[in-house]
Amino acid sequence: MPATRLVSPDDAAALAALLTDNREFLAPTEPYRADSYYSVAGQDELIEDLLAKHVTGTSLPHVILDDHGVLVGRITLNEIVRGPFQSCSVGYWVAEGATRRGLGTAALARMTEIAFGELQLHRMQAGTLTDNAASQKVLERNGFQRFGLAPAYLKIAGRWQDHVLWQLLTPRDDAAVDV
Ligand SMILES: CC(C)(COP(=O)(O)OP(=O)(O)OC[C@H]1O[C@@H](n2cnc3c(N)ncnc32)[C@H](O)[C@@H]1OP(=O)(O)O)[C@@H](O)C(=O)NCCC(=O)NCCS
Image (tube, rainbow, N blue to C red; front, side, top):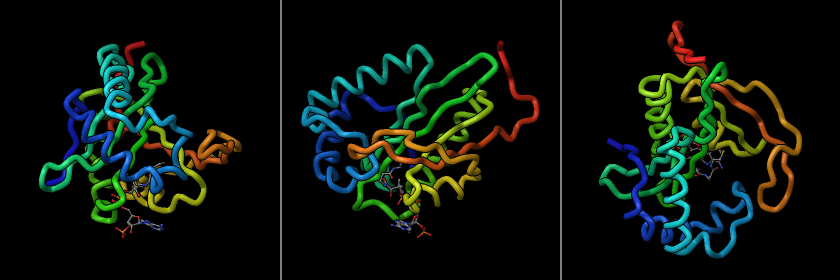
């Protein structure tokens, strides 16, 4: 079964290699990245930062594994906000060679289970480029609904680009709110 798990400092080399191999594939959907992002040291630093945010409860950074346990991508719950919002934002990518096998869909399904189970959140949000059909399919398959179009929302591939906004609400009707 494809799975996700918490990122570890030991993943830095594998992530740097995967990101280097997929630089061109990911570039149209990512912000501009400095060359250091593709190095082991850059990934070391990023993982350290993500795990520090995880400790404070504002991030849940996972890696995506294929059927053989090989690391093929990343999925992160970002900007976990408590109080009356109880929301997070999700971002993900899968290496080009591992796409179209259902791994993105399965990874998001697992993160929704964690978000609404263990984390007791009320809502998840995602934003896609208007023409990112693959990502939109992954979201739709997990029950996410479009709720808006945000003009010039994020600077992706060097340009402020419009994004479709998506959300999924908890299936629980007794959403915990520790305001
Ligand atoms: C989006 C992404 C994570 C999908 O990962 P994945 O593991 O291929 O996802 P799945 O296999 O679960 O589903 C993807 C679906 O989109 C389809 N798809 C892939 N590329 C497509 C394209 N260019 N146009 C239309 N559909 C496309 C696939 O065929 C698949 O549908 P199917 O199962 O009916 O054939 C991956 O393509 C990716 O990392 N893209 C670049 C980064 C990115 O866009 N991240 C999300 C930013 S919001």
